[in-house]
Image (cartoon, rainbow, N blue to C red; front, side, top):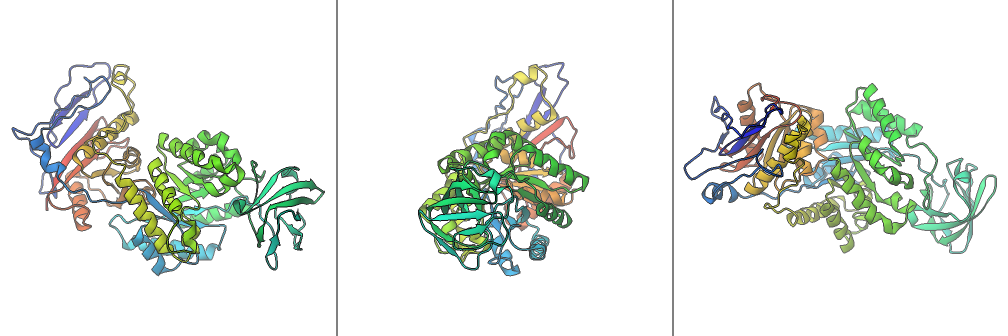
Length: 563
């Protein structure tokens, strides 16, 4: 393998692995055939860039450019843009055209449909509004749609008025339908009797109330109230340390999933996933329906933790659903599990969402608690791709303020994380060259790493052209310090990339001529004021799918924006 270098970029051409001659200079890429919006930097006597790939001991590219060559580039102002994405749950407070537009302008990146509430008609309205917004905004402000399944929730029955539970009081749950007295209510799950044991702790609404199981009869579980409160209709029930034996995808969920296929949603968030089998089952169904929808399991049950690796490996990401996770497992374990889930997703290059109670107080109050602000910052520092609002935007009093707080805290936290002098860790060593182990995927990873290192050093945004989204996802994984503009000619890819950290996806038809496409891309960024004349950008041509290049050739270039 050899690498050639020129000012403004380097091109690596893969040679036969059977021979490893000294690095030879590859031909410089041809000059544009027409005036374009961005032109390559020119080599001068004082501007030199050298790259040596095969001769290093750790696979790193040694790029050296003297201060005169880099002063113009590194003085370029880098506009701060939030990288961590925001997922907003749409509900009665935000399901109008006006509010969805305002949420998008304030910072929403993903609209979440909670299928535990509402019906298909109300969710259809939201889907249509989000699609209308996307059709009118083509400058990179993309809103993806996530359908969150209800899952096998165990809930108490309807009560005509709230029942006040007091500490030490005896209280019963029965599988008989329609029971509601001062000391007994129904549950919606026939196997509830079999799932609980004497000594178990029942949690109501994730722990807002708790009861200890004292005895069981044929159709009734007798309890003693440990922590009292007001029991309202259809409250969620958990057993500490246990998961219900219900299937992860219920009949209602399948109807909702079909609804999502018909409407072309971008993601499914699947509730109470216990193992990888349910993910494979859903993906097989989607493949049969020819539906390009990504599957995000919600890690929220005790049974999911031992199977965490296999669940995420089978999926397209994960959500840390801390509410039920903290109900089924000791609450003190939740921060540790959150960090583990985020790290597992990062290691597999898959997006991860941290959810539940992030700004819970802002459902009723215009400002957050300081602990909630710290919670957002911790999720950002851990490397979450997205953070989520639930009741805050679904039925809260201050949905726009909640999004603004989340945006501001994430942006401020990110500003403390990115150090342009810190290079991303490389994914392959030079030893791989000698052992003939490089696959196209490994080569793409290495170039993604080097492109990020170059963009960080020069403080330039990155532009990538992608048909599958894979290279944009890979670059996002390396967390470049500047914005990543992902141009794609596939609408579905554009929608999906809205979830990934640091990515601004833009839909654009590609020309057969690369320079013409580059020109139109730069023009669109100028029009949207993402860049300005005189700025520099790092342009990456790599990835498993070849566009305008030989399959064995990968390009990284630095270009100056011209009008």
